[in-house]
Image (tube, rainbow, N blue to C red; front, top):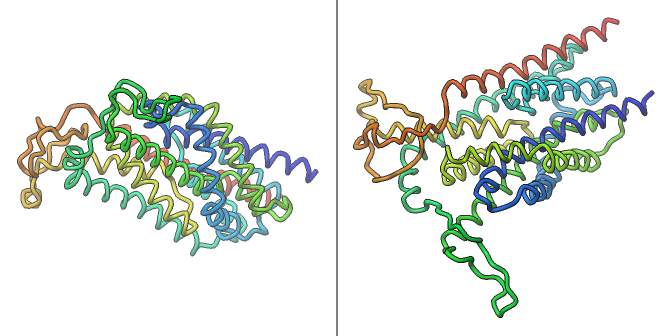
Length: 383
């Protein structure tokens, strides 16, 4: 019987990992694929390598938190581990059907918290620490994005705007110079393209560090499963790789085509800020959502850019910026307060209604997971 449960647990972990790989690959490498810097297969391969590095290093700390600090490891029986992974997989299914990506980390923590409340073993101090960082991280992402959008973006856009030539970035030959710039490619374009791809790999690293635990922490925490961290990381990354090579193709198309709504420079800023936040939290052992941090950074960046139409002293008097939540483009580089709403392009960077729907789903999915987990484990404890 235990062998069957272990098998079911591994299958559930693989299912969760495949879905994580599909969504994370799209988020990390969508800009690179959309700008034709790397193919979809190349993106999946890079995602596998850098997610493995992140999971093998910083991911251990997050596994330790989720596999034995939120609730004691003794509570992770094989049945409990399988049920928790089932709740995580169910939330992914619900979010995919609704078209809104769920926070796997938050849902996983919610499922484990439900087990802890039902059994009276939840360590509230650990849970409180995690919840506090769930509030702080999006706020920091919004604040950093807002400051960059208001004070720095127009200058960065003027100096470091990224334009692409139509030809190949690099060309290979058998001459004395086997590698040379493609026709029309400038040194600036080569540097910018390398930077885009490097930051994508950095996002893959942070995704691996944060998300490996979501797939295998319950099994690693279960004494009955007898699974070490190294085996768990390999299973999780293997499943994420399958997701990257299969279902990520659609998300790569979506993010890649959607990049026209966000200049490549803005995508680089959002990627760097959100990945850095998640890397720091992973180093602390805090499971957190890369997607939420990225979304709040996008929101802050757009708000900050639009707020340049109003000076701080005028805002204190009650004057509000003409919010178009719009494209981040600096045509003339006017000073704060000198821009009018006509200087803010009409193309939307984000839709407030969509943001509201996404945030609502991100709040609801861990709550639903926690309630379902509490109900099931309370019921099983009674009978």
